[in-house]
Length: 577
Image (tube, rainbow, N blue to C red):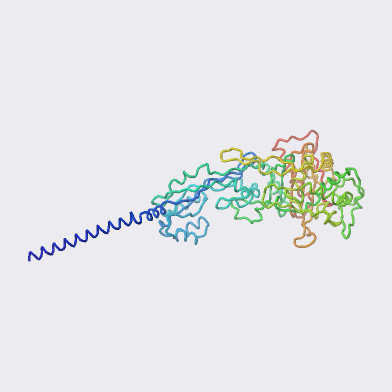
């Protein structure tokens, strides 16, 4: 009995020993398999779970006005990331986060439902919004310091500056055109997450060496603001569809303001129609009406015609082929100066008849009409100037007073500035220089003369024509400013009928363009109001805005008035004022 018990004990001990030996052998085999045979594979898997290679981008460079005021800059933001493997309820988390971020809930749920250790949720989140999401206390959601684009002046010069998308790349305006300059440099890095999925040492990689370069514009923030205010008043008070205003330094071609109305806020660009984004001063062409008569006069003066040369204006009605041209008043004999002063359509047409189509075409082309200015803005229009050999008789007459030709606002401002500066067509200048992240000038842009278009003598005669008398005869007296002498020209163009031949009834573009002071022009200003209601003459609609912009800009720039001089707006309009 006792012997049988001992035998059973011995057998159990042998079995246990065998099991222990087998277990040890299995552990050794598994250890060999893990450490030797699969060591490299498992090591890489562990590294992939907790380490990741990503490309980071430095902060975007700034857009500054000529006085180094910020127009577009980067501000603190938060990038939200996730460790999906740590999220207990992906559906609930996706719903709460998507509602706050206004992003696709279904897509976010797919991301959070994966078993990955890392995923991007949203970049460029405002600190306030990130704090709300942080308050949800969702396990597996993490927050990293970042930056996002911000426009501190909201709608100011929005069509010029443009905006960036969620990835901080430029989508419109200068943000898009100079994206390669502004965007931060990229660098591939390897970062490590801790056991909770949080990124370690990420911020150390985002250093100033990756910051993008900045661009300094010729735009003056104050003058831009004044221009936008005056333009808004002109458009809204006349119940117009839209408007534009440009301010340029005639001697250099520098643009101090490019204003548009309606406006939009690039911080919330998604709330606006895409047409509102467009820099229409550069991209859109229109028929300028009687504002072109000054360039017709320039062609005549260059051909030897004098300001005192007289032309019979047919008592207000003149037939060319099957078409009849009208003036608003029954003029008989007028000098070239009076044709500009009183804005006779018939007089302008007869000027072209006297000098020939080729001379007018060459003059207009010389002033830059029909060609891009090469300002460096995407989508610039060349306008439309038909080759003179294709002109019919009515074409030459119509073009002489601004119908049958289309121009951009930029072309018109540049052309009038050539008269103001004594005859040199300047290349429009918008970007002044590019500055590195360390504050060093990388590239500077200087005023550039494209060509001489008229002689200084012709330019002086044209100034006199545009600055003859402040009287009831003048059609732009609403542009006058006490103490200054101004040269100006109105335009009132009937708009072409969309998709049909001819012109639309009761749809006009009102224009006033000019410069001041006469002796040494400091500023050239153009105001355009599209489809004003009730009143539509350039002298009534656009001239007051011109006056406001010019007067307030002079005050801001400390440009003193002349002694005992009254501002003169010698303007008129194509038979319509």
